[in-house]
Amino acid sequence: MIALERITKDNIFLYSSYEKTDVIKYQSRIYPDENADAKLWYYIKYDDLYIGSVWVEKAKENDFAVLGIFIADDSYRNKGIGLEAIKMILGLANTLDVERVLLRVREDNKRALKCYQKAGFIEVDRYVKDNGVRAVEMMYRLE
Image (cartoon, rainbow, N blue to C red; front, side):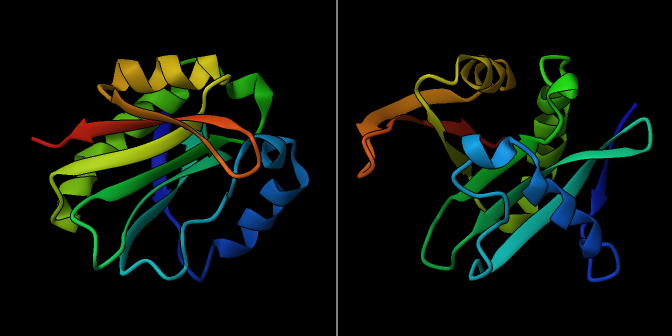
Protein backbone atom coordinates (compact mmCIF):
# COMPACT_ATOMS: atom_id res chain seq x y z
CA MET A 1 0.00 0.00 0.00
CA ILE A 2 1.22 3.50 -0.90
CA ALA A 3 0.89 6.42 1.49
CA LEU A 4 2.30 9.91 1.81
CA GLU A 5 3.59 11.10 5.19
CA ARG A 6 4.26 14.78 5.66
CA ILE A 7 7.89 15.61 6.39
CA THR A 8 8.24 17.54 9.64
CA LYS A 9 11.00 18.60 12.01
CA ASP A 10 10.24 15.43 14.00
CA ASN A 11 10.89 12.99 11.13
CA ILE A 12 13.32 14.87 8.86
CA PHE A 13 16.25 12.92 10.34
CA LEU A 14 15.15 9.92 8.25
CA TYR A 15 15.81 11.88 5.06
CA SER A 16 19.59 11.82 5.31
CA SER A 17 19.60 8.13 4.36
CA TYR A 18 18.60 9.14 0.81
CA GLU A 19 21.86 11.04 0.40
CA LYS A 20 23.71 7.72 0.52
CA THR A 21 21.80 6.15 -2.38
CA ASP A 22 22.34 6.20 -6.14
CA VAL A 23 19.42 8.61 -6.54
CA ILE A 24 21.92 11.48 -6.25
CA LYS A 25 23.35 10.44 -9.64
CA TYR A 26 20.01 10.94 -11.38
CA GLN A 27 18.44 13.88 -9.57
CA SER A 28 19.54 17.48 -9.80
CA ARG A 29 18.32 17.78 -6.20
CA ILE A 30 16.60 15.63 -3.61
CA TYR A 31 15.33 18.45 -1.40
CA PRO A 32 12.66 21.02 -2.18
CA ASP A 33 13.86 24.59 -2.55
CA GLU A 34 14.32 25.92 0.97
CA ASN A 35 13.44 29.40 -0.32
CA ALA A 36 10.07 28.34 -1.74
CA ASP A 37 7.24 30.40 -0.30
CA ALA A 38 4.93 27.41 -0.14
CA LYS A 39 5.63 23.72 -0.32
CA LEU A 40 4.04 20.37 0.32
CA TRP A 41 6.76 17.82 1.14
CA TYR A 42 6.11 14.15 1.85
CA TYR A 43 7.81 10.83 2.31
CA ILE A 44 6.58 8.12 -0.01
CA LYS A 45 5.78 5.05 2.08
CA TYR A 46 5.23 1.60 0.65
CA ASP A 47 4.13 -1.12 3.06
CA ASP A 48 5.29 1.12 5.93
CA LEU A 49 8.79 1.56 4.46
CA TYR A 50 10.12 5.02 3.59
CA ILE A 51 11.21 4.61 -0.03
CA GLY A 52 11.38 8.14 -1.40
CA SER A 53 9.99 11.63 -1.42
CA VAL A 54 7.60 13.81 -3.40
CA TRP A 55 6.97 17.54 -3.18
CA VAL A 56 5.41 20.53 -4.90
CA GLU A 57 6.83 23.97 -4.25
CA LYS A 58 5.84 27.48 -5.27
CA ALA A 59 7.84 30.67 -5.33
CA LYS A 60 5.86 33.83 -4.62
CA GLU A 61 6.64 35.36 -8.01
CA ASN A 62 5.43 32.25 -9.90
CA ASP A 63 1.92 31.35 -10.94
CA PHE A 64 2.85 27.67 -11.03
CA ALA A 65 4.24 25.00 -8.72
CA VAL A 66 7.18 22.67 -9.40
CA LEU A 67 7.05 18.92 -8.79
CA GLY A 68 9.95 16.91 -7.44
CA ILE A 69 9.96 13.17 -6.84
CA PHE A 70 12.34 10.28 -6.38
CA ILE A 71 12.27 6.67 -5.28
CA ALA A 72 15.58 5.91 -3.61
CA ASP A 73 15.71 2.12 -3.93
CA ASP A 74 15.74 0.76 -7.48
CA SER A 75 13.80 -2.33 -6.44
CA TYR A 76 10.73 -0.12 -5.87
CA ARG A 77 10.93 1.61 -9.24
CA ASN A 78 8.83 0.63 -12.25
CA LYS A 79 6.01 -0.70 -10.07
CA GLY A 80 3.55 2.20 -10.36
CA ILE A 81 4.47 3.60 -6.94
CA GLY A 82 5.81 6.86 -8.35
CA LEU A 83 2.70 7.32 -10.49
CA GLU A 84 0.43 6.87 -7.47
CA ALA A 85 2.53 9.26 -5.37
CA ILE A 86 2.37 11.87 -8.16
CA LYS A 87 -1.40 11.54 -8.39
CA MET A 88 -1.67 11.94 -4.62
CA ILE A 89 0.51 15.08 -4.47
CA LEU A 90 -1.28 16.61 -7.47
CA GLY A 91 -4.52 16.15 -5.54
CA LEU A 92 -3.06 18.36 -2.80
CA ALA A 93 -1.38 20.92 -5.10
CA ASN A 94 -4.48 23.08 -5.51
CA THR A 95 -3.90 24.32 -1.94
CA LEU A 96 -0.93 26.28 -3.33
CA ASP A 97 -3.29 28.46 -5.38
CA VAL A 98 -1.86 27.50 -8.76
CA GLU A 99 -3.42 26.24 -11.96
CA ARG A 100 -0.46 24.25 -13.25
CA VAL A 101 2.47 22.17 -12.05
CA LEU A 102 5.76 21.98 -13.95
CA LEU A 103 8.64 19.54 -13.82
CA ARG A 104 11.93 19.03 -15.58
CA VAL A 105 13.39 15.65 -16.39
CA ARG A 106 16.42 14.38 -18.28
CA GLU A 107 15.53 13.51 -21.87
CA ASP A 108 17.16 10.08 -21.53
CA ASN A 109 15.10 9.14 -18.46
CA LYS A 110 12.52 7.24 -20.48
CA ARG A 111 10.98 5.52 -17.45
CA ALA A 112 10.27 8.85 -15.75
CA LEU A 113 8.96 10.45 -18.96
CA LYS A 114 6.49 7.58 -19.39
CA CYS A 115 5.38 7.88 -15.76
CA TYR A 116 4.79 11.63 -16.03
CA GLN A 117 2.82 11.18 -19.25
CA LYS A 118 0.63 8.56 -17.55
CA ALA A 119 0.02 11.05 -14.74
CA GLY A 120 -1.26 13.60 -17.28
CA PHE A 121 1.80 15.80 -17.83
CA ILE A 122 2.39 17.09 -21.34
CA GLU A 123 5.69 18.15 -22.87
CA VAL A 124 6.05 21.92 -23.26
CA ASP A 125 9.76 22.39 -23.99
CA ARG A 126 13.09 20.68 -24.66
CA TYR A 127 16.40 22.32 -23.91
CA VAL A 128 20.06 21.70 -23.11
CA LYS A 129 21.24 22.64 -19.62
CA ASP A 130 24.52 24.47 -19.02
CA ASN A 131 26.16 21.13 -18.15
CA GLY A 132 25.17 19.67 -21.54
CA VAL A 133 22.33 17.50 -20.24
CA ARG A 134 19.30 17.39 -22.53
CA ALA A 135 16.09 17.97 -20.60
CA VAL A 136 12.33 18.05 -21.07
CA GLU A 137 9.95 20.44 -19.33
CA MET A 138 6.47 19.07 -18.72
CA MET A 139 3.25 20.65 -17.42
CA TYR A 140 0.13 19.40 -15.66
CA ARG A 141 -2.99 21.55 -15.54
CA LEU A 142 -4.90 21.31 -12.23
CA GLU A 143 -8.67 21.06 -12.40
